[in-house]
Length: 227
Ligand code: TZP
Ligand code: MG
Image 1: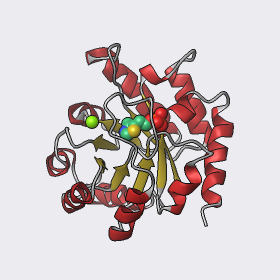
Image 2 (image 1 turned 30 degrees about the horizontal axis):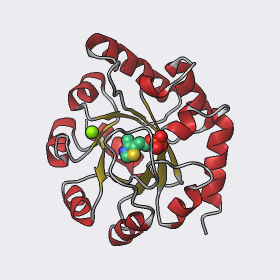
Image 3 (image 1 turned 135 degrees about the vertical axis):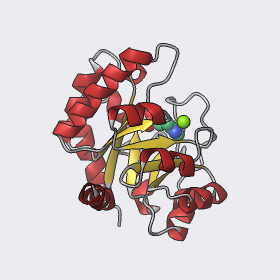
């Protein structure tokens, strides 16, 4: 048992060793394609993490959600990419996801940790230094900071904060990876990397890309120009 926990922890530490391209998707974000086909293309294209974020009036629920989540997990496992579930700790535990991402309105990080265990990944969305301090104290593995730019993908998103908050938070918590989110594209990602982000979390610029592999390469190239 201990060696399983140790290897999970080791894997967790290496998550952000390279600039991370973090793909977030739910069935509502995909147009004119099968969501699982899109996910596989993203995995083949070289995303670093995947988060299932199933939202909206037509969101899958119950058994259908469980089945879809399991398919996503299977694909992520095949490509050795961590599979994170948004909000739903129960679902994450039930299907053995690699982690959970929570916002300020969801279960607090300490409670999530007690339910999913040390070896799993917890990401927390924060919008202020105060929220960041609490998340770090409660054991978050990474922080999501945003919206950086204007976004169409979250109906209740706060006003765009630009990259300054990423800079402040990543400077104060240099040991915790900070991931920028909200309206990030290959064209504006450079400022996010420059502000100190360890990753970019992206819905539409990947889900709606004509050629997702090429788009992932553009995101990677944007991180290489970060200095
Ligand atoms: N949290 C803050 S902005 C956002 C979330 C989930 C949506 C990001 O989507 P997009 O399409 O990359 O702007
Ligand atoms: Mg949430």
